[in-house]
Length: 219
Image (cartoon, rainbow, N blue to C red; front, side, top):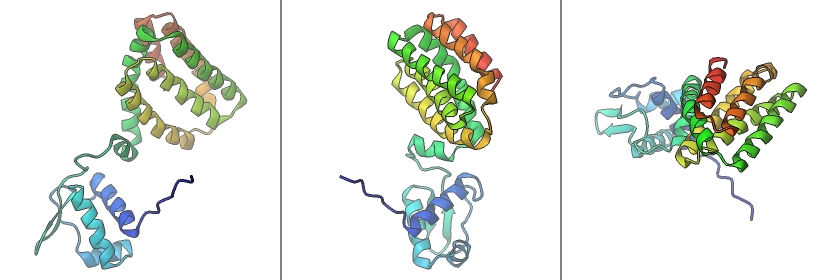
């Protein structure tokens, strides 16, 4: 059966844009939003759309509608916002920092807990990283790089750590494909990645940690 594609309503689109403005500090906590007519002009929509968008954000706990006074920003992020949604809004530098911090512990744990299957999985992606890097196939090289690091995270056999790392990486992958214009960065770092794989395969946690540090310091 074909999956249904649900198109966003105009109110949902306006709510999403308003939420982004609140999250980025355009509207600060405690600040009063512009009047309905001003918002209608700003977004180019009707009154009912603005009211529905405000209702959606109020239900998330972001806005507080006070009759006769106006609508005020209650908080910057929803109280129970899913992690993946939060990562979508994250600054790229924040994602990079989170990923780098996790790299150290992941390398150490993977070297202690990896199985033969884990090593084989890493090797497959590492080989693909090298082949596509030399061939100048940028998108495939980036994908192989992400998959290699994800395979290391999976080898920790800590599901929470793996899911957290994988989520951050998936959003960074889009950034990498936008920023990098060739595979030079990946081919130049192939040796350090191979060293990381070897230390994990050899069950050397401290050496794996140092190998991860070399990769991060040259990122």
